[in-house]
Amino acid sequence: MSLPSLLLVGCGKMGGALWQGWLEQGVAPSVILDRSCAAPPAPHRLARTASEIPADFKPDIIILAVKPAGMEEALASLRPFLDGAIIISMLAARTIDSLRAACGDAASTKIVRAMPNTPAAIGKGVTGVVSQDLDADGRTLCTALLSAVGDVAWVESETQLEALTPISGCGPAYVFLLAELLEKEALRVGLPAETARLIARGTVSGAGALIAASDEESATLRKNVTSPNGVTARALDVLMAPEAWPETMTRAVDQAMARAEEMAS
Image 1 (cartoon, helix red, strand yellow):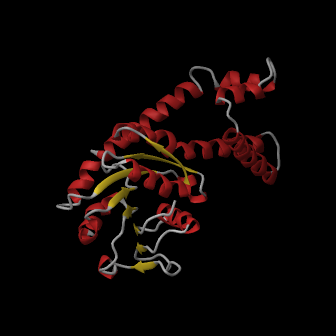
Image 2 (tube, one colour):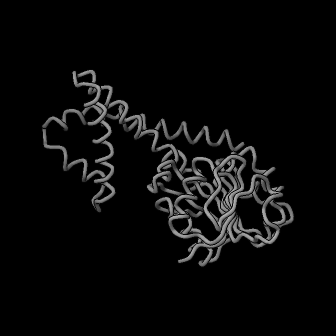
Image 3 (cartoon, helix red, strand yellow):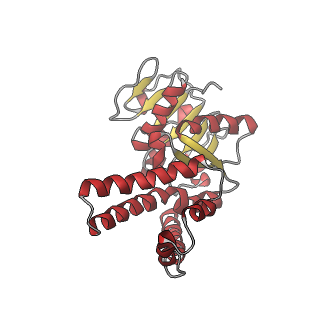
């Protein structure tokens, strides 16, 4: 499926990751609106301000990847390009209603909220998506676009999208913390620093690759590593105690959701 003409507003870490993925898939002539990014290869164009966007450029899709505080200013500057376009917002805690209000009288604009996570930078992300404005063709188009940086999960409501925040949005940080703690423990039990780093990172990335390649449930993969009354079982007795990982993960997710609600209010 060929991708449409795009206007990418903001080319930071997430916007840049998306852009690289789209280039590899051969996007149509498009424009990046950003004050500081490098010029894209021809025939794509760079605009430092909205006034530099060619007047005859009519994007099919506008990807909003600026900071949430810049939403109103960005959409106000893009009014000539909004009618008939699909806006995919990457902005955390900015609702569809607030996006629609910021679009003003561009009534035919279709609004999509998308929430990618940081592994999108290497094409291994997970992006949650919600919209009530799209027909089947529109959903297919957005899926093709967002698939450039990983898996795409459509949800039915913004409530479900916000529920993704402490799972897929924050989840990479939990995994990085595990690698950090494994490395720390490897040092504590006497392994050299270089070895500690290698085995901690390799264990986490290898386990991730295994779970990605397997159709088995995560619990089954865990049990496959755990011989009854063996070394792993003894360690898991500690980690899986009710007051350990099960309880602390629930508390962590609850705290992340509470903070997301604070930011949205």
